[in-house]
Length: 468
Image (tube, rainbow, N blue to C red; front, side, top):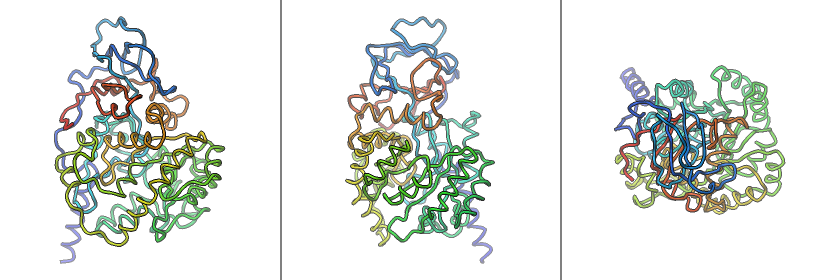
């Protein structure tokens, strides 16, 4: 009987591997002719570096996947298909720098099979043309990056961290221990994380990962409710230093001001979360500013953890558009009874709301670079759609709509690819990743959800299956 149980467990593991989930009609598809040239006429152009619209209406010419011209209306471009922007706003493709592309937006109590291709399509549908995955099964997530790059799977351009470096039993291992049966824990934990106990373990784990070419290293430094093991400062420093020696930057998931200081003193290159449990001190803000360390606030994910959304009207239209009927039904169904640990975590998230907003205001005032990331796919955090929610939360915390849009395009692009980034801006020579929206999102951030067209590498994607 035991051998039967093991066989069934392994079968379930195989079914749950990324890419094996249920798939409905795709939200996006390549154009039938596959063309990568187009003239987009009569549009207001978002000047991402300056976080504002350029004056008047323009034509934007795209040839072979690159922006060839941005100028006054009437541009000559014979033989190229035309798209009438009808006075809408043309923005660079959105860039989400905190995603988990092989995750699931279902609640943990729901048996939902991950659908990587569906997640990637949802990002594109919502205008996200580049994404940084900050934690996925290894080596699967690196193969996903290559499959998208080769054209085998339609999705946004991907940057990949791979596994999350954490203490033995640390975050997110404690989540897997809580919600996964033994056979999933056996499979997922060693692939989704690197549990390191001391500096030597940390250095060895980084060196073993280098061959997969991670774009960044993700560290989890978060004690949560106080019962979760956390990476020691010397281990954090060993991971960061070894990564730097290999030319790889690091980003640290932090939950508190103290954990942010640990990360900064170890030399991390960016912070994921602002943090989420308490307020940054002036010392920490000053250190972030002096060292030019950017921060990804991720406001929405913690608000989603703190309180369930109880009706479809609690979701943005673009979120409803990317969610299947089954997912929406599951998210709106009554939640099961919570244990003490879950209640404590949700209370921490709720109690930290005001501190998170003050953190954004402090960081903005100090000139710290703010990046934009959704932390999708987590429960209730929808791929692509919830990035729009995150931008709305940033605006509510004090950014102007233009500043939020700049963070989601030009600033994020420069964080990922440096000053030579060929995306994140509408300028000659840049990659033609573009989003055309009705209205003016620099005045009303909600207008960003009124997407008319998404252009990826010069292809005007076919968007279908909208439930907006």
